[in-house]
Length: 530
Ligand code: GLN
Image 1 (cartoon, protein in one colour):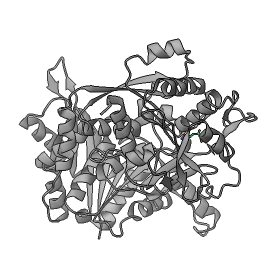
Image 2 (cartoon, protein in one colour; image 1 turned 180 degrees about the horizontal axis):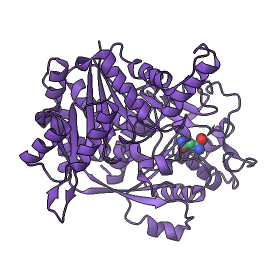
Image 3 (cartoon, helix red, strand yellow; image 1 turned 60 degrees about the horizontal axis):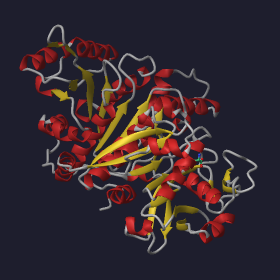
């Protein structure tokens, strides 16, 4: 039978529950256990895909095409395993199921209530992925005390009662602030969050206490006394320079053993040498590589979380320190401005996006990179912009555009493929999730990937217009990646340049610290001319 671990948060948000959950997953997986991670979000949105990146950060996409919270990105990067739609659940989805059941008459006319109907649906989703796994690790979004979170915490309380202490474990992540004027670490907020959790009927088994200063012995004792958590289960989760250090820190704090002991399971040796190698490379980097990331959400860098991580992974592989300059494409540049804006830059990345804001800036940047032979990676909208720029400035179709922005463009090089066979996934008209792509032999993409068939994740509506394939190719563009059936252009590149690649998919989702994505490594390698 699978064991259940619940990760909850107290005191305040942004303490890194996602990273904590991901780290626990990595440690248990490294012991040889089968784990699955899932995130429960108390907000009422049914579809995280429609939430603003300005507020919520990146939308992470799974292989099976679910649009999810960015924490799933942490889970996949740490645990190095593809998760599915079942690993992401919002309160909105729970309520939607309950109301659909009610409409179908499944509750036989009973009064439909939070307890038991909503909590039963949450319990069903928590336990749905248990089969074949040793550990089901569930993170509950939000902070203890939030009204929205109550049904989730109630479901956890009930599961503890249903399954017993030996099958469930509650972890609370809290914050122990250092108050400068008192010169002390303060434990009261952690005590209060624990009281709040106990009011609901949940006693935490482990406290992960974030702090900027290390705990003295008496702090452990005090927290333990007031929270009713065994002293050795109070763990000081000190601030780190790099989130990838956290699994090792938990390992040093004995967390994997504490978890195994609780469940009466065997604690096995953990080998994190591949992680250590990544950290060492990062630490011992020599020289820098400067990249301009040119998008419209640049003031909200969580919107590009996976891209930033993928850049760190690739830079560590090359033992370089990456310096990211964020360029806001909403300002429309002329060439003079771009010279200033991009001075000293070694390479450029144009990420994905939706909507017309910043489009002209992106087109100008694509032209700048192409004409000056600056290595460029265009992702999704970035790739579409590269096609538009090439059609306009090389093929002389001055009004070429994507029909996302100009519906009646005379040269719609990017458009909607109405009868596309691929639009079969739910979620309306988006192409979502993993698709196979075939690469052309000898292309830049082939060299980077070192294989002729890849699988990458998509999230977009618009596609390269096949009517323009020949004209763009005649002008020197190489369409180096196509779908299995050759109906869709997935990669374009300009072989005259050192590295000028646009991809219709999102390579950033598959980058791992110890296995950086080949396109990111390729981009940075071209940038440093290695
Ligand atoms: N807006 C574009 C489309 O829908 C690109 C989407 C993206 O970059 N993820 O096709």
